Image (tube, one colour):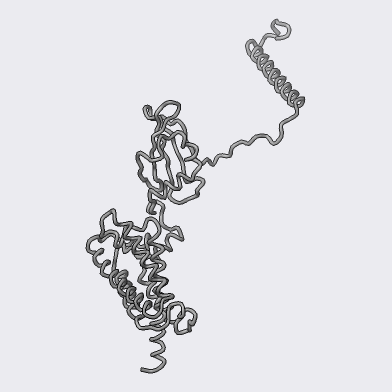
Amino acid sequence: MPAELMQTVEAAREVQLPLLAALLALGAVAKLTPRSSGSGLAVLVPERLRIPSTVAVGLLEAVLAGGLLVASGLLGEGTRALAAAVFAGSTAVLLLVRRRAPEAGCGCFGGLSREPVGWRTLTRAGLLSAAALATLGLAPTGGSVLTSFTWTHAAVLGTELLVLAALSPELRILATRILRREPCELRRHPAGRARRRLHRSEVWRTNRPTLLSSEPEDQWRHGCWRFLRHDGLRHGRRVDVVFAVRSGGNRNTAVRAVVLDRESQDVLASYGVVSTRPLPGPPRKLPAPRRAARQEAGLRAGAEAERTLHEAVENRSGDPWKDPEAGRPV
C-alpha cells in the first residue's frame, strides 16, 4: 500500500475519536434535558423506567465522550471497545423500535429526534458503529488528535460531516425551529413548559390569592394556546380561573386569564388582553387653583349662555308672528 494512502487511512481512523466524542457529548446533553424520554430506548421499557433509562444512557455517553478524548493505554482501548458496543447496540435497538413503535423517534439527540426511525437513521447508526470499531488499536487519544490536526484530518472530517448531515433528520428539524417556520399550532407545547411560563407571569401572581390550589383541575390545548382551569374563591363565591398560555411569542403577552362565576358562568374579570387602542394619559401639569376656577367659571358661563339661547330660539319658533320682547303680535 502506498505511503500516502496509508497516511490517509490512518488519519481517517484518528479523526473518528474527536468526532465520536463530540456526537456522544451532544447526545448526552440532549438526553439529560427535560422532554427527552419519549423515544428511542424509552419506548421499549415500562413507563416508570423511561426517565431513568434515558438519564442512564445520557450519563454513559458523557463518560464515553470524555474517555475517547483523554483515556489512553488499556483504559482507552476499553473505552473505544465499549463505544463500538454502544453504537452497535443502538443499531439493534433502533431496529426493534421501528418494529414495535413505528411512529417513535430514535431519541439519539433527545427531543430533536422525533421523526420515525427510517433508513437514514439506521444507516447513520451503522456507520458510527463502524467508525468506533476503526478506532481500536490506535495509539493517540482524541485530545492529541485535535492538537496535531492536519489538512488530511480536516478533509476526512469535512467529508464525513457532509455524509452525517445528509443522514440526520435532526438538522432539518433544528433549522425549522431556528427559522420559526413551523406553525405554532403544530409546535410541541408540553404542559410542564406552559406551567413554568405561567408561574413566572404577572397574571399568575395577580390571581394567585384567588386560587384554592396551585394545581389545575383540568388542562387542554387548542391551536397555539394551552388552557389550565383552576378552582378559586372570589368575594365568597366559587369561581373558575382559566389561564391561557401561548406557545412561543412575547413573554409579556403570552399569558392571559379569565375569571368565571361557577354558577352563572358570567365573566367577572379578564387579565392580559392586549389592546391596540391608545389610552388617554393624564395631563402633564395641573393648572393653578385660580386658573382652574376661572376655567370652570368660563365653562359654566358658556353653558348658561347656550341654555338661554336655546330657550330663546324655542320661544321664537313657537309663534313666528309674535315679538318676544313686547309680547304682542308684530
